[in-house]
Length: 377
Image (tube, rainbow, N blue to C red; front, side, top):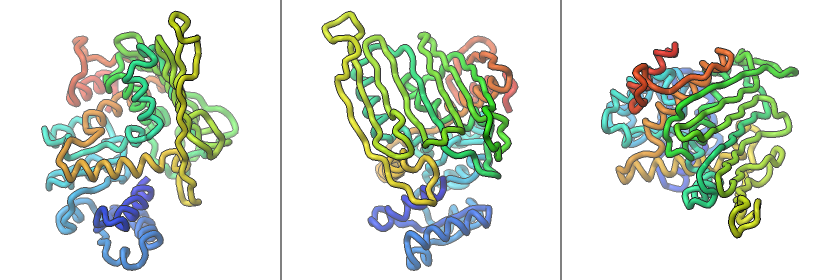
């Protein structure tokens, strides 16, 4: 993921939107690979002026930074974030924001009230044009009250050897958890349950022990979200969602093979008004981005969103306005994803997202308390 961000930073530097001044990684091979990409995309002059550092702490002060993108290993996210934020440097961090819910709570405590202006969690779906179109239709009430939603994420290639996975359910679900929660005002679901399966003809190089996951989230009003993740869709990367409400339905990202247009369609009419049942009332199409050989599977679908979220991050840093999505979204999505992982490893046990006294989970500390009560680190 780091190389995708490097590519955008090089482009923004060439557009004179930013000064790309430093690059760091505690793992020499990763730093060497990123440095080579800067040289390839930005040329020798850019490569010569971008300083290299072997740690976040070493990079934080001497490089005189205004903002940083953290795309290190998940286990390093929280400490890398703090290396910069303690110096007042804004951070856009890849998801999840920490390796555990307890660590996320500690991070939020360290950030304090300044957290929303210091940390943006990189959920690119927030900046995806097709998803934003769906959000607009939904907020306008065009499908009525939400009853159910279905969210699909299917990879076209197995995870590579050495891939750092927190468990297939948590790894795949965190993307879809954000997507589902975004249509519930980012409110936590009340219940979570999940199942995992190992379908045949698959090389489990990351040792995840499964390649298909199904997660079900239920909110206090009874609305249900079904999240379906899979590592085995050899015909192409598949990512889309459907919202079904009392007055209509929205479909985003119908599968089009390995490359094509991204569709968003609005259907209205539920059999009790003047609109005939199932009328397609509006549709839009959004282009994918042609990938190069070095790009990851998801690049074609989300390249524009990744660039837009980074541009938005820069604008928020310049204006001092709150970053979106912020740390609160980070700990909420991490909690739900890790609870889903726990459920999938417990035969699909339904887990209630409430405190031991039945109270709601309103803070990162409360989330950590809930996580501990169900056996999560």
